[in-house]
View 1 (tube, rainbow, N blue to C red):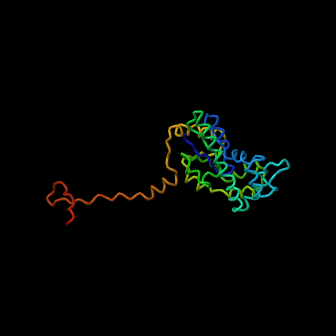
View 2: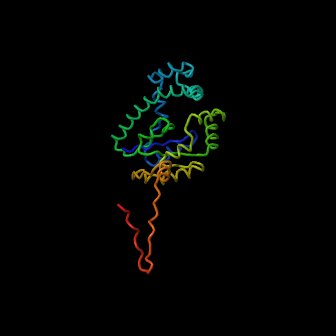
View 3: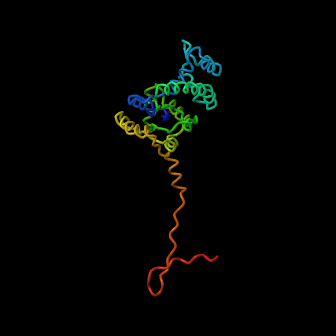
Length: 240
């Protein structure tokens, strides 16, 4: 089974792209959804989160309040790493279970939607990376409206992720989500044949580095023409 990673910064439109893939018959597994599954009430994952961050990250019904938890961890890289060390192993284990089920039902291709794909090293474990990209101003406006956050709160989340230039250099395919949904949908449709055929280009950054490191082709050695005319003579062989 070929697994393609789908990623992008917060507010880039990963979920919109994921829905388009699903409409095209491609199963999509969401790391965010798996992260919710592993911290359901009564789960070992939620117990570990509460042990690390206290009861203050729970709501009145005993479920994890992701906004409260986010307000804590996005201000402190060490706390964010602590949370990731709790969640990521459990998410990976659950993802492998989902893959086994999809494979057993005959699926040959799956898209794994992961916000922190590069940050967690999962880009090395997928066949190729599909990046959804959008200008920062658009992303901030989308997240502020969607999650009812202030601009500083959104920027704190942006700062916890890779910058888009780095993502673009490491991605194999890029979906530009700077226009309407129809434009994004057309790009996904154009991409599907390459995914199904396994035609994977080099990431833009690798291709650029390879081009920059390519040795220059030396010019041919000069030829000499005899004084009396005639065809040019080849250059003399080096002396032993």
